[in-house]
Length: 509
Image 1 (cartoon, rainbow, N blue to C red):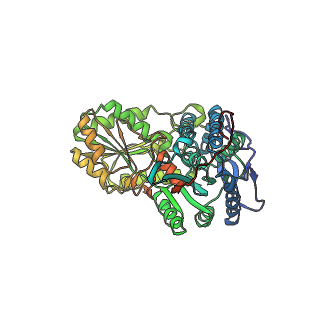
Image 2 (image 1 turned 60 degrees about the horizontal axis):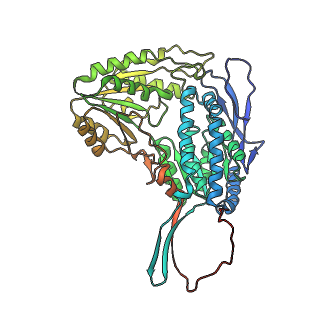
Image 3 (image 1 turned 90 degrees about the vertical axis):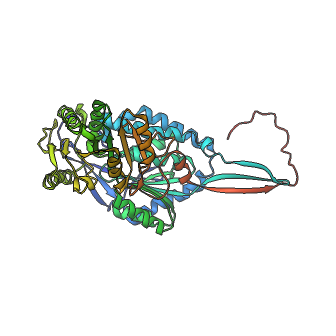
C-alpha cells in the first residue's frame, strides 16, 4: 500500500513499493531498489523496486495484449470508466494529497491543488465521445461519401518528474486511455507511491487489467520504454537536457514523442503596475512548492524606477513566510532530497561571487519540523545580470532573481533572448501594453496579471524553444491528436441495406 502521512517522528516500518502490472501489484524479488525518504524529516520511509529492461518489456507486452480489446471498447464504455475514476478521485483527493506531501514535501494545500488541476484533465477526458468526432462529407462524387476518423496508437509510455507526482501524469494518461490506448507509466523513483495509488483507483473504477500499468525505475527503465518496438508514443516532462535525450532517442526508434523540458519563467513588471499585486504574485509564484515547479517565476524583470520599491515589498512578504513540515500548515516545505537542496544552495554562493546582491539568504531558515529535513528557505537576489549562473540556469528551488531594465523594449529582449520559452507573465494596468506583450513575447504560455499561466484542461500546456521537443503540447485538443492518428475513408455503397424490424428504443452498447 502507498505510504501515508505521519504526524510525528517515531519508529517507521519501511515499505516496499512494487510495480503495478496487469491490474495487480507485481514484484521481482531480486530487483534493484532505491530509497524513498520523507523530505521533511530526512527519514527513509520505503524502498522502491527499479525495473530492468526485461521487466519493462513484460509490462509492455501486457499493455499490448490489453490494447487489442480496449481499442475496440465503445466510447460510452470508456467515458463511463473515466466518470467513475473522476468520482473516486474527487472523493479521496485528500488521501492522495497526503501521500504526495509525505514523499515530495510540498505543503498539503499545494498537494491538494495539484490533484485538483489533474482532476480537470480527467473531467475533460470524460467528454471523449465529442472529442473523437470526425468529419463527414456527403456526395463528394456521384454516390460517394468521405469521412474522417481518429484511431488510437497502441501502447503509450509516460515518464513523469518528481515535482508533480499526480498532476503531470494526469496531463497524459486520462486522454491516452480515453482515446483507446494502453499505458505503461514510469513515475519518478523519488516519490513513487502516488502512481501505485492511482493504479489502484483505476482498477476500482472498472478499468480492465493491463490498460494502465506502473513500472518504477531509473535510466534503464526509461531507455527500455524508448527502445521497445511495441511502445508507439512517449510523453515526458523533465529537465531540458533529459527532454532532448528522450526526444532524440524515442524518435530514432520510430516513436511519436512529446518531451516538455525546462524553463526560466520571467515576470515583467511595468512602471504602471499595481506593485502590491506584483509583489504578492512574485512571492506566490517564486516560492510555492519550494520553487520546484516548471511554471515557477524565477526571474522578475523590473522596468524603470520601480525596482527599489518592488524589492522592498517582496522582501517584506518573504519575512512572513513559514517554512516547515507541510503537514503543519506551513507556507513552504522542504526540497525533495538532500543532494538537490545542496545544489540549489550552492547557487547562493555563485550569485554573490558573480556580483548580485543577496537580499534574503534562505540558508539561515529555522524550519518548523522534526528530524533533519532538506531545508532551504526563500532566497532573493537583486541586481542580477543575464550572464550570471543564477539567471542562466534553471535552479528549480526557492531562489528569486530581480533584474533591472530601463524600458519595455529592454524587458522584452531579456525574455526573448533566453533559450527557454515556457511561461511568462506581465503585470500592468495598460491594456495596450499587455496586448503588445502577448503578441511580441516568444513564449508558449502568457499570463497578464496572472503569475502562473497554466492553461485549463481544454486548452493545451507547453512552451517554445528549449522548453519543448516535439510539436505537440499536453492535454486539450493537441493532447487528443497526439494520442490518435487520423484516417480518411472514401466510400461508395451501390445498394441500400435493410436491417429488419426492431421497435426497441435505440441505446448505446
